[in-house]
Image (cartoon, rainbow, N blue to C red; front, side, top):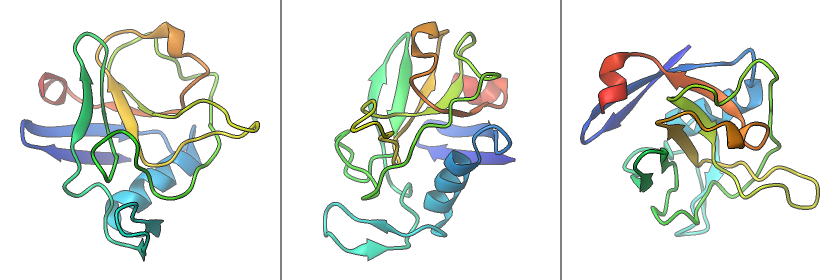
Length: 145
């Protein structure tokens, strides 16, 4: 399963891992296409418009990662709900260009995943077990973006 992130620097094609992180992939795809309802943090209203359209990579750390998926563009926004991690033992951060959910750690024993995601640009083994990996950048052209 593939998805394409359209940016002003070019397209980033990612391979998604629905067998390893089914809820996360479903959430990402639903928010991207408008198949999933979410609450707009700007208006407080429920919508089924594609959440990621027009969003930015609000956090860019050279030599580490890029982060996006916040409907507010500040790093504080999300879809109005959270869901648990899907940490899979076959997936890890021992290679760059992994697509994973950004979160605030566990709160009251539950995960804090929503809409924000990141793509690593280097190996990041300290992230093992802390973030759900649900895809990887698919090709060299996408890695150059």
